[in-house]
Image 1 (cartoon, each protein chain N blue to C red):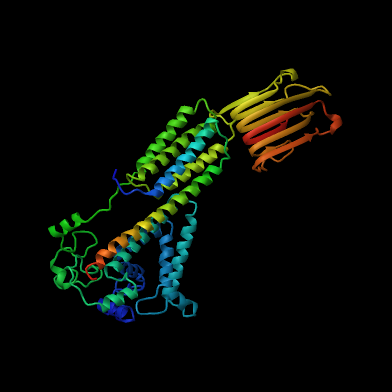
Image 2 (cartoon, rainbow over the protein chains, first blue to last red):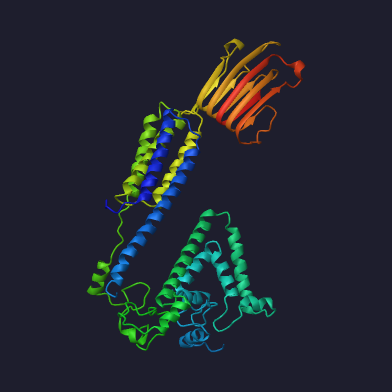
Length: 78
Length: 438
């Protein structure tokens, strides 16, 4: 497996999915009674939020890379 | 029209009619490679494929199910000849009935007849459709390949920009434009085919055979040095581990848990694996949309498993309860999954006797047989399924979630004729309840 820069979107998605799995696990163990569709909605919403986080990360990283690259380009001219 | 134009004339004709160079020529029936009407020749020229391939495919299709004849007839009617702007169909409809048009109609008609006669022969139909799809796909691919090779795949704005830009140094072409082909080019004097310049190279331009262009060590090196996209996805492994987790969870809990809970345990394990995989992929390896979709699917299955009633068990059985006397009727009968038959018609009830019992089936069917002359007080509940009472039609199946019915049914002669009363509470989680009189 290759190491790469942290992806916060995957972190959010993983936490949401783990949480939903825990809720269903508790339901299966009889500890907690849930309405069957609620965690599914939570999961879909969480994945959408994760996508949003990924997009934001991508945008901020791109703008940061551009602002970092620009002084180097303009440096010799000024 | 009387003297067949040469290949050069024809290509000039299509190129000179306002078409930009390199754009695909429209589909026209050929005059020079023509066996019957030039349909196959035209298709071959359009797709840059040997017309013999189309001839063979259409012949086979004509014999097997008549589809070939239909296609041929309609192509003949709808595709105009090279250099003409009217097709045979239009000419036919405007009253100029000629031999070729009539032959085309007859051809399509015979094809339709054959096709209809083969309609109930599934194997032949499948073969025909598959062959049609394969031939169409091959033709389309060849057409697109030629189009892309000849540089026609760029939009006009790009073409304009490229034309305005100064020419830049170009590597020698690997394949010189559209490859020369023997079915397009005239046979040269020494008996070989292809362009006169390429006549010396054996086999140049064939559909199969050696490569057209130079393919030397430099090209090999360049090909090997090409950067391949880094594939470090761990989605496949996550899926396999999740599958194994689900199987293990379901297998371990199968025998001592209800069906819904067992499935829930396995699927919750799989979901947890997906979540862990995503957490790992936050730093190492990649997961993509496939993992997300699988996660949502797993969660949907989990929701369905949660919705299963707890009374549904993992074993499927068939149970028949037939008490021989009113005193032998148990207060309740239970079955997890399967078909439960409760026969209450083996004994006679006295006039004012009342027998109470209840029956529960988790999933499957509950069939209750009651005496002909008993008064019935029924309370029936189904989680998802159908209820059928005596006197209702057998083919009227109406599945509804969360149904509850309370009815009192008198026997045929009315309340006076009733001998005894049966008070039944019947419930089925998933399936149907059927009450019949003996």
